Image (cartoon, rainbow over all chains, first blue to last red):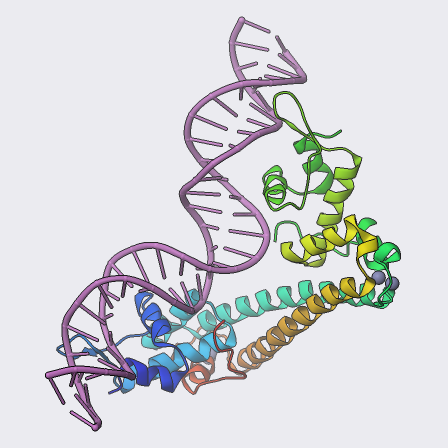
Length: 142
Length: 142
DNA sequence: GTTGACCTTAGAGTCAACTCTAAGCTTATA
DNA sequence: TATAAGCTTAGAGTTGACTCTAAGGTCAAC
Ligand SMILES: [Zn+2]
Ligand SMILES: [Zn+2]
Ligand SMILES: [Zn+2]
Ligand SMILES: [Zn+2]
């Protein structure tokens, strides 16, 4: 049985975050001391570590919530449900990567074009490019 | 002289966003009608398009603010200041890309390991991997 | 028996960049 | 002239994931 600070040390989550996750039903403390202190048993600890692992991979708290409900009742859920969540996350990640690569590409081109020196920016090709409407892709609303 | 909705149409920013940018000194309406309507002259329009171009590249509003102050007084600023901002943004983008690539990698591995079929999730290797603490890299606080 | 570290709660604050609302003018069209 | 479309403002709400605060109770050590 761990106290919250011990669970925090064990998982690398802060005690604040653990309480926050509890509010969102991600982590549970099966027991409380008379004074109300949270106590985590082995099952709670495994659950917390599952949450931590999922968060590290980049799953949203909503995703984690779904993964947890699969985990607690595996016979009522299929592998497909799990891959759906995972694939959806991968799609998101892929999309963000390509947006960022587009930015990366533009930024690299801009950097190459500019002397980067101590001269006045009157001739700066980065500023010029922005004035000319340097656009690789319209990102619409962020 | 354009009205706000015309500037919105021209730049692809919403009128709301244009007013929001004005609050943050990114966009200006040099004139107002008697009734208080904003009117944008050529210089305002060019400035707005500069802002739009910078935003499309991914610069933060704070970055754009700095780029604008360089733009309006180029002789007081150097190319180096411009490349500093640009390089810093590129560094940020590169870091985000590598975080995302790490997630991408893990997600792909997980997806390959799971059958994705309609079977009960009792044997699901994705769930198993998360239970085993599948971690590629500790992301600390998001 | 008193420090000081740790625990509790509800609820507020943070970040960035919007996004929307309400209430009330103004302008263009039919 | 009436209706609709468009403009104004201050200010509140949104998103996700925390992060922190205040005010107070508890516990181990010296
Ligand atoms: Zn230069
Ligand atoms: Zn330059
Ligand atoms: Zn399977
Ligand atoms: Zn599976």
